[in-house]
Length: 545
Image 1 (cartoon, rainbow, N blue to C red):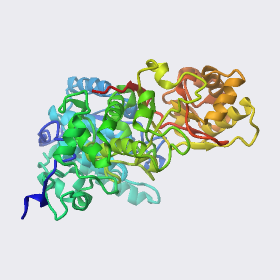
Image 2: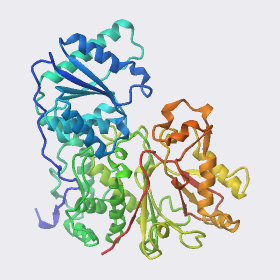
Image 3: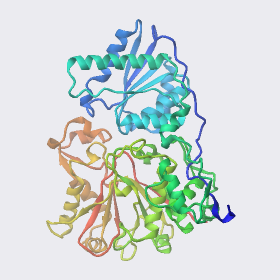
Image 4: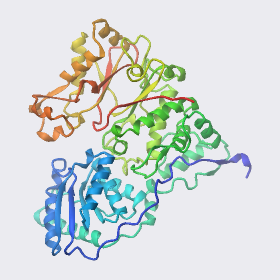
């Protein structure tokens, strides 16, 4: 074989941040033991069809094991930050328990529940997770990267069961929990064999033999069975291309940008981010923007490890503001949120490929998105500075000469066409009505919204004397729903306490959570992107070499 047909490729994934651990040793019996049972906030009211599962489990375990003491604890783990999980872990360890059971792992709460259990298993405390069909694959994938063998037991779906079937299900679940806490699981070394998402995707990627020295077609075929990539063809990350990308970085190649927890247990480093930027088709000049976006995602308020796995269809919106956008050709005008612009497409794609290839956010396994959306391919555009009537984002957060990128986990933008008129109040009322719909996350998790004004309407609003603060205040006061249309308390989980006493419930906690940018071309439309809700918008400066 000729040298020209052998390509050496760096793997697009990160190395695991820690060695796999054995599950904690289990006692032979639970008789006389103390067991902690955590209700992680998902059974009621989110999962009424699962019934009083936690109540039953406590009753059945106490009846099945002589002298077993069970302590109950309610924790809405989906809202825990990493430091809060660490504090809870320490508190549990101090409690002297013989074991821990968490129910029910479903949707986004699965990540927090699994991270807590994995850390406790490493500390020697036996744990069991009860999971739905949605949460189970994510819990198993995360465990396979960290503590293979962590017991994940399917929770019963009670809909349609008669009394006899419910009783049998209860007995089966109780026996499974007891067995999981008294039988030390074997390390599942073969777990990767039937789950490519947790295998060793580097294997076989370091050398590819092809007739075409560019190797992209062969690489595309090699990545697919390993669940690497986003479904589109990729550019082969040869060493020369990766080194060119790294040369555009102000940071050293091995610096960790985002560490675990994430589904894979690997860290996002500058080097593997550069590899994925090459795969995405980025030019080296784009890499500082990709780097700044990921650094913004590392902020605790962005809640990276939850955004990577949620059922929500949002993507990582990236708004580039400042002089670098024009230098790099990041589109901000007509059609800037659509196809046709290499910088927009590949910068956004690089970030999302990193979520797939390094974090291992895999559809159906470790990404729980019910439908997902095109925003999860690429969601990058620039703020239009030409004719901007207000202070653009980079001047709000830095200065006129410093470029910035703002990231937000949010839905694809919703079109707003004001059919009630074109006066400022009418246009903003239409925008508020799009934001305040009963189907968004914001009545449970109010938060940041991205408001994208076209330049013509932005200029008209400014000519009428409207400032960005005026617009934020108007949207805050009008993007609301009558309390009578909402269920009770559960729709104020991360809201200020005063939300419970207002007749009209806002979709944001403060006016400042409406982030107003100018982009797009001539037309009657503008746009608003509702948030996932638990993630805050984060802005970071773009640093170049």
